[in-house]
Length: 383
Image (cartoon, rainbow, N blue to C red; front, side, top):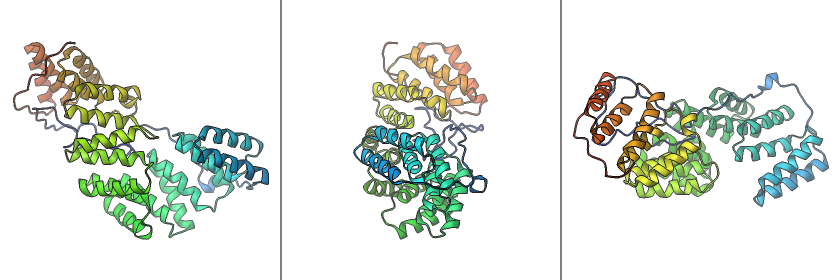
């Protein structure tokens, strides 16, 4: 099975070709560029050389508020914890521990920009603390700000050359740069030093997924999950690996688990929708594709053909009108994607518009596609 996309850490994968259609194109189809390829703002981070020194000030009162926030966080009340920290920081903006904890909470809530802003301040207050550069690098990797992440990783290793977390993050950086041999060298080293390094197993699984070693990827993702069950992306990525192996039952189980955790991304709904479609459960597929669209997938990652896939599911139910709306929408933003014209030709065939069908087939061929096989009729249904 080909075509699943892991998010976040998400790699480029080949898109599934329409059933009974063989597409080979000379034009390169849109593909995701990196493990978590989406549109993110260019987060502002302060290189150490540009940061004005500020004295770190952490009073007994600050420590008391810090412990109160930690207690709220540990009991599952992150909003209350952030409120405590907001009030404390308003009184004293020069406490590194307060900014660092708020950065952690903001990161968990996917407020990456706010987290980076707090870590900028923390680093200015405590520029020798390796952990702070690692925290910021981890966020920057997550949002694919690779040059900024590289700066932080290099600086962390300059401060502490054998820092295992920094080595792990460098492995993640190499992965995102498609330098898989270097990534494996760092990740294997990190795991050998710490068998409980869940992030290293996760990134190594991502490398193995990208190199199509799906069983090995599943093993690494499984270890990462065992070490840290909160890793939403590990469930999602393992589900993609199961999907590539055609184990849709296991893939569906992992995608279901991923949707029940924090940091759910629209890619998870897209991939679960794909599993449902391949299992011919078109109604659930449409529901998940619609959820992915509602969460903004088509706007934040134009490489994912969510409207095209939903059109295929509508056609599977015999709902040609809705399928036509979706494929036309897709072709407005992807006018040189032969797959869209091939699917629209299939829709025209179903409704008996032979002239329009031939026109779309000709357009697909013009874009480099070859069509073979008999296109099956979709199930009968109503629009």
